[in-house]
Length: 476
Image (tube, rainbow, N blue to C red; front, side):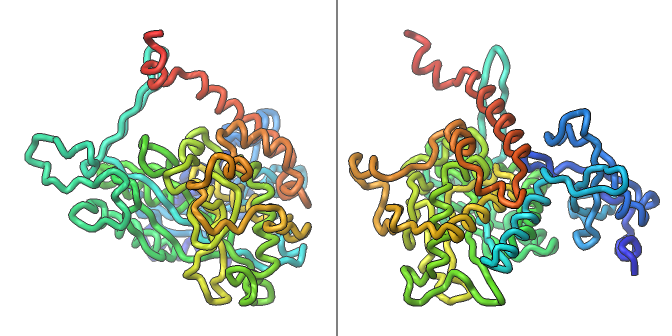
């Protein structure tokens, strides 16, 4: 059975009328184009669907014509479409004279090249990762930026600031400031919606580990998924964000993966658990190593810590990211590793004891990242550590088996810190990207486009007067 026939059979069985193709832009947003079922055929998988890549942030206008080639194995019924619609993702190619070639800047192609480089290096056959998806769920959000004013406001019925509402809807079950961790009903008002989100994820092929309310009182939530292969998990990261946001909107609410949407509350990260396998055996396990981690695992950690500042340009690529990476809110700020220590950039979970589950997590990333670029960059940094045998302990990066937030200023000064702003992260990337360009995994042109785009974004946001500045300076 050919590619199109498989898809058409699925369409016939489910009375599908439209086919939707979802593509990833440079920043990590899904965009899409939809065709009637009658326009679908074999040519879609050979000639593809043409589009203007310059509007996705990729290519200059004079070289912007590209084609999207869908992957029939990604076909799934979109649960949010009113008209029965089949959804597919895939890859992007550049139109050539004789044949199309994979577009080297397209995020999924970058992740595929990173996985292939890992195999060619002999370090491992596969990388399994498990992201933790943290997000806030609000009832309303309002924001504006104009010459006459800049403001934002979020609200949710469960927030502590609503305890004084004098209306019949106030039942007194608001959640205290930073008091939401694993809170139960009736305070946990989004419990049923989260379960719906998880069932939608399961239907789309994403295995959910669990969900719960997170620390942030005004509606911070978490869904954690089971470990999966790196490129596939990048696909599933896009799907998860799509499901969470659309399921919330369907119930008249709004979900955001912004790292710091609420001042003085816990920020939302996207911790990434990781482990390698080679010839079916775990690479990171050694019962005699520190925290049962192998020498190879320590070298991988060494690569992540050495390149941590430049990695932030991919894993924390928004100005808002650095409002989360501050002391006192369960987010890491210091470059180091330890067991069961949430203040370290790399944490080794004590509960993962068996060889096939022995792993560690990188706690700095957040979900404003383009997951394909972020996961690929993490892999390339770790492989660089393995190739160069970068020992994190010998470099003074730990293990830090104590609370890094409680160190004296003198002790803290001796420990490397993550960048404090997007500009600092971009400066680090500009000085440190050779580990990314090995075998052309990250094209230099992509890195330059990323630097230019993100610097422009940072500069534009920094020029907007902040409401807090009026409080600090208006009367001077």
